[in-house]
Length: 307
Length: 204
Image 1 (cartoon, rainbow over the protein chains, first blue to last red):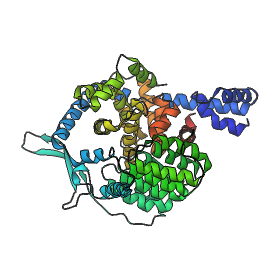
Image 2 (spheres, each protein chain N blue to C red; image 1 turned 120 degrees about the vertical axis):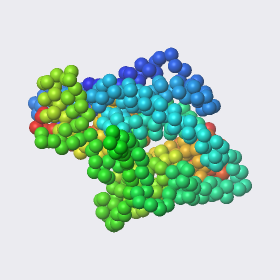
Image 3 (cartoon, rainbow over the protein chains, first blue to last red; image 1 turned 90 degrees about the vertical axis):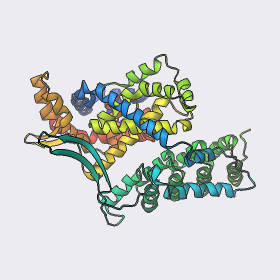
Image 4 (spheres, each protein chain N blue to C red; image 1 turned 135 degrees about the horizontal axis):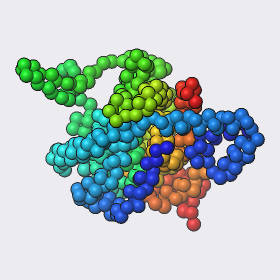
């Protein structure tokens, strides 16, 4: 191990995050290299310095418990009001779709699920945080506190959100930053779909690709996950992308998303995926998806079973 | 070094039939859900406070996280541990808050003073009547610099560093929580420590 390699490992070594073999090699190098010993000492000083930063929770001290009481009370209230407003919604019906049995004879069923997820993302109603038309200005306001004084005056603290437009080209870092932020716009799946649609042209950037992979595995909306898959299609040969596609096939609950993942995998034949696909095909409970997987395995000259 | 991993493990080791509670909560048992909340909510609030250093935002994160858990509990399939799933939700929400701050170029707990940038949370502690004067001085001089260095990280780097250094979580778990590999979490931690060391070079 040379000095550069040791320096790269030092942060991990200090946290006990290297395996025993690497640890031995680092220590053997340290035993005979003064420069790396110095680097280790500096890193430990840095960690000690960071330890002296008070925990925000510790700094809040006695207030943390009262904050927790407030949080619990807020949560109880929010859950009660949610329960009162969402009895038997169409979202429950949508969730039920995940368990439907789609006959092999009607592959259009899978296409319908794809469309439902995709357009659902664009037209999610306001109740679920969907796009809301702007009428007044500001768009949203929240009264945070009210203080009345003896003279009859009132002081009201209001949080306001106003809309403004930002224009620029995709190459502009600020535009990219906003789009990357919009990819995580939790309350509006339509915005997530649109931002991914624009960003996919820049999927050659590691940061954009990471955002697409993250949405593919974590977005609760199937339409957003499908849009992320579209953006990753040209990178089907990338090992990280392929590993994620395998995870999608194993874990995504939406058959439409799994079908789309198969389509992306089909664009780049890779024999190392055969084992994963054989495993997935055995566990797949949707006839159409299973048939697509079987066809893909046949195209790869592999049997659908591991035998 | 702060180590909350031990706290989490201790909680998990407590006589709590977690899987049973989750299943009961999935069937709509509100008491079971409340017991789950109480088993973890202290950790959730602490993580949110440490990442965001804003009681108001931590309170929002707490509510958003547990509402999300409640809405999505039926999709929890025991593919990973419940606390990994919960921490994933919490850190994603915190990441969103941090990203929004970056876009708005905000760092709400940092204020400019005649002595340079100061962390409001630390300042509150330093100004408390019981605070040690030497520690007050130390906090005033250093905390702003440390918070400035943390503010220079990307939201992802900051989350990885906070979870590893202050929450004591293993990088493998952090990778699972933020939806990436252990290797990517290692790289992220390396970048974070390099950037911070450069910012704090004068103090090391």
